Length: 290
Ligand code: SIN
Image (tube, rainbow, N blue to C red; front, side, top):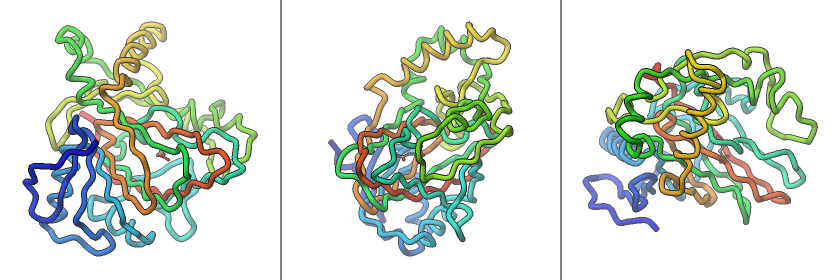
């Protein structure tokens, strides 16, 4: 259920989820450039709610690109072929006869294995199936806040190891896949590389701390054995994915969703075999996590 906002905004209305995590923004036409004030208010609402949906936005690819660039410079999207003529747009298309697991069906924060992972991902719904296809989001800030002081102190100096290997690596899920997939995935030895980020990162805009790990891309904890890392990460993953920290996004056609990869992870649910689902996706570049 959405709640009416007290509205500190002059150019838009925000209807937030009761938890404050996730909100709908109405009153804007994103097919046109936003005024400076409207853009500042969108950014403020996004910082506050982390996942913001703009219903009824019939965006062309050019308009999606223009709004993305108003938020920030494009990020780099590896391992997936972009749309012809639109090098910064991915088409997440799943045909009715596809039976391969839907793309994004594991908890992750986009491209967290990059030195500077994307700050934002934008996803615009073109065709929404009549059943299934929701996207779930985890509030990694409230999940961090809910930990004990002792756990927070233990996690503070740790660095988590991130890699794309399980998904896009030479021995990863997509390398072994045989079922039809319309999305063109490019498996690469590049995906087998890894790097580390702080396990708890501080959001550059809000100053709030959040767990920055995910089951898909976090493969260990620096300086720990595989078993030690798996035990800590396993506990944190089950803690983070409790219902209390989850927002379920239900799509409608022509909806634009923008989420903050610095303080959320997400999971694309299936359940729509036999139906077409088409989304267009862009990312906005981010900072080195600190
Ligand atoms: C993703 O970016 O992980 C896909 C999300 C979705 O298709 O709902």
